[in-house]
Image 1: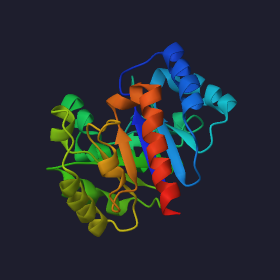
Image 2: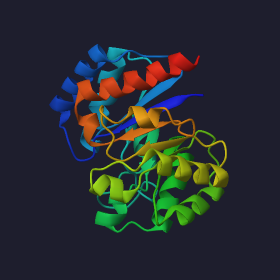
Image 3: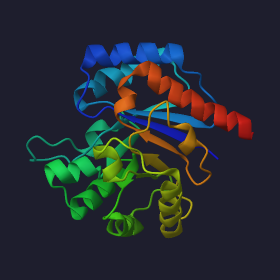
Length: 235
């Protein structure tokens, strides 16, 4: 089974800091066949990083946009259309709980963003949480994308900085997989070097979705290497 590690930088790092992060990460990370690492920098870094990362030649590493507009290119002041970033990234994060909480994003807007992302030839990383899980999952039925990733991120785990118990993560992942079989499901919510082993070992999970810890290149590399080691041990 292929595994994924997603690092979401959120609203952090400028161009200089971002390049420094990738230089450090490339020295600490050991690529493994079957593991894809996906980094989501801020929009202001995407253009320069898409070129810089190529020079580092890190195996199986992709970039993601943290969000896109629910509309195509046109008269939408301040928006960034999916079509505008398709030469810079392979993935787009869709429907993160912070988008709903702080920007009042609706389920319809999320569905529109998914459609725009897929139409642009990009792969959506769709965030799923309670109590919106069923409506979020239902919206996916109209999206045709075999390479879509589902990221389960309970809001309580992110706001309280305490990860959800592995048993509950396994139950939630199983529920998601019943609604959308064959879709890789990741878990995100206060994952750190100290606790990630309990989640990597869950057979239901296809990877992890990391926020705060991804800002530290060395710590994030350790997480990636742990996932890679788990793949090797199972091969």
